[in-house]
Image 1: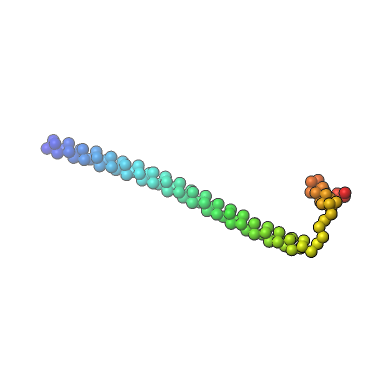
Image 2: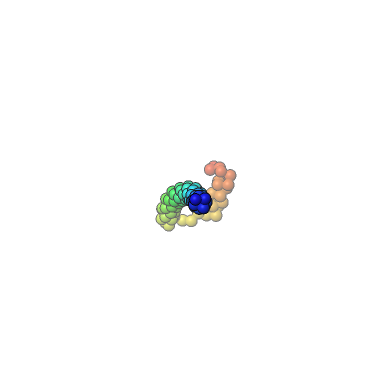
Length: 98
């Protein structure tokens, strides 16, 4: 009878170790699940930002195309006009004259 009790106790300890291991794995899995969820949310945010940037790029491309078409039939500015425009931009003064 004593041997049977020892054997049962041994099996109980083994079962308890298995339960502890399963519990530990469950906690790790839960932690990993939260980490994966956080990464998925971050990727979603990046996708939204990329879509926004893509929309802005498309708008800028359209503007550049329009400016190119409008500029095709105009004469290029003189070097004085270019210098005046650069000075206006640098000094943020629309009334600057060269």
